[in-house]
Length: 379
Image 1 (spheres, one colour):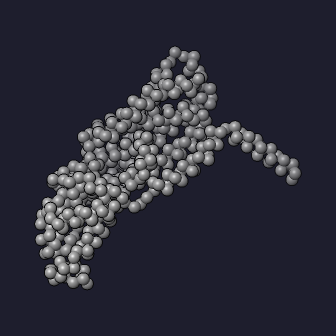
Image 2: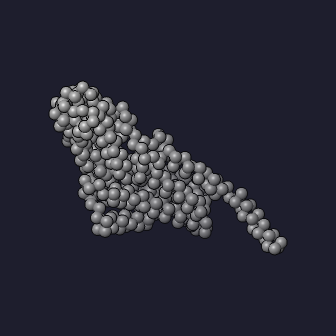
Image 3: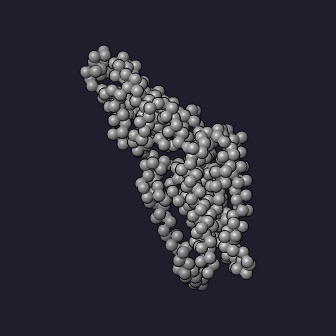
C-alpha cells in the first residue's frame, strides 16, 4: 500500500510539473470556463428586445399613432422604417433590415368603431428567434391595446367591459416559411457552422501536428515563400470543404426537404468565399496554438461562440455590444444570413452585400497578416 501511494505521488508530481511548465494549456483550462460563463449569461436570452420594426400606416389618425407608440414604448420593438407601401416592408424583410412589419389599414378609428379593425403582421420566417418572439409580442401588445381603449369608446359601440369581443384583430402572415418548419432555418445555419468548424480545425490540426513531428522545419530548407506555403496549404482543404458543403446541402434538400429558392451559382461563389475565410482563421489558429490539445481546446471555444454569438440559435439584436463584437470576428456570423437569405428567402446579392463585403475583408486582412505571423512563428 505504501509503495502504491509513492508511485501515485510520483505520477502526480510529474503531471503537476508538466502542467505548470505548459502554461498555455493551463491558462486555457482556467480561462475558457470563465469566458463561457460570461458568454452564456449575456447571450443566451429568450426575451425579445429591440427587434427592428417597419410600419406602413395608411390611417395616420390618433388610434394608429397610439398603437405604433405602444409597440415602440414596450421595448420589444424599435421603429426602423416608416414604409410607404407593403412592398417596401417586404423588401426590408428581404434585406434583413427589419424582422417584423405592421400594415395599418386606412381609417383605423372607424374600423374600431365597427369592431372590424384588422392589422396585417408580416414576419420573417427565416429567423426562428425573431419569428417566435415577434409573433408572441405583437399579438400580446395588440390585445392589450384593444383592452386599454377608453371605456367610453367601448360603451358607445355597445360593448361592455365583460364582453370578449375586441375592436382590433391581427392577421399574421409568415414570409419565406409559411408552415414555420423548424428545419428551414436549422439546416442552413447548422450547415454553415459545420463547414466553419471542419475548415478551421482540419487545417489547424494538420499544421500543428506537422510542427510537433518536425515536418514544418523541413520547409525552411525549400525555396517556398510564406505566402506560397499558405496558398498550398489552403487549396486541398478548400476543395475538401467545398465537397463537404455539397454533401451537406444535398442531404438537406433531398433527405430533409429543405427548399433551395435562390441562385445556386451565386451561393457556390459566396460559399467559396466563406470557406476560404474559415481556412484563413484555421491558419491563424495554427500560429497561436503550440500543440494539438490546444487546437482542440480553442476549437471547442470557437464552437461555443458559433452557437451563441453568430445568430445561429439566439438573435444578435438583444445582445450587448461587446458580445456582438466578438461574434463579428467569426466568418460564420456573416455567412448565416447569406445561406438563409439564398436558400430560404431566395434573395440576391443586392440584399446580401454587407455580409459579402465582410467576408471579402476577412480574406484580405488574414492573407496579409498570415505570412508575417507564420514567419515569426517559425523564428
